[in-house]
Image (cartoon, rainbow, N blue to C red):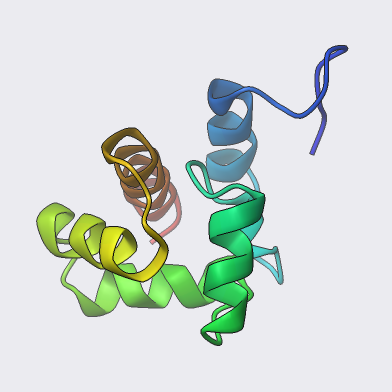
Length: 97
C-alpha cells in the first residue's frame, strides 16, 4: 500500500487501495477504518486477516448495523471508523463477488 509524503495513507487512499486489490492474505489493518490499535485488538481476538473480517461481514448478511455494532463492541471503533470499514467491505464485495 502506498503512503503519502507525510506518513501513512489517508482514509481515502486506504479505501481505494483496499477495494481495488485482491483480498489475498492482507492484514486486517489494511481494512479502511482499522488502524494499528483496532487491528491489534482484532488480531488478539483471532482475526488477523482482512478475509476473516470479510467473512464476518458476509456472515452478518452484509448488514451495516450488525457489522458496525460488532466492530464497536469488539474494538471500540468510533462511528467513522465503523462506517469506513463497512464501506470498504461493501465496495470490495460489490466489485469482487
